Length: 112
Image (tube, rainbow, N blue to C red; front, side, top):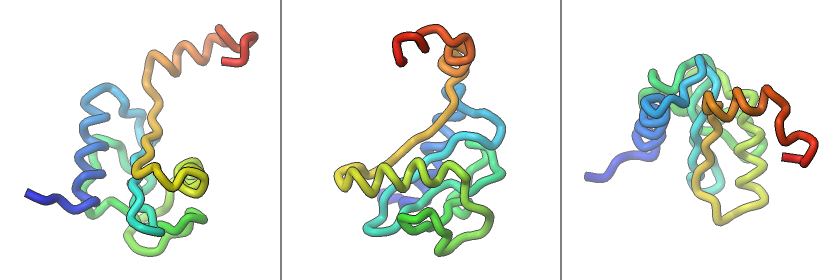
């Protein structure tokens, strides 16, 4: 069965949430759709995303269609799409262990 790209993004968000990547309303999934980008809207958790929660934005992170606001992090996604035409999807989450390790500053002296 074929799924719409909106459905695939909603499933990806929910799967990430089940894997512990939910961070209140932070974290997002996007997918390239030609010259446009489909992306989870702001102010909703990964575990709550339905296909109708997916916005269409342009490569300057401006909303074209959909209900709700565009994530501030949309520019992270659109900049990847601009410089990497081979990339079809971008995922940005805050994994708990990675976030905790980053907060310690360990590795910062080595640039990682």
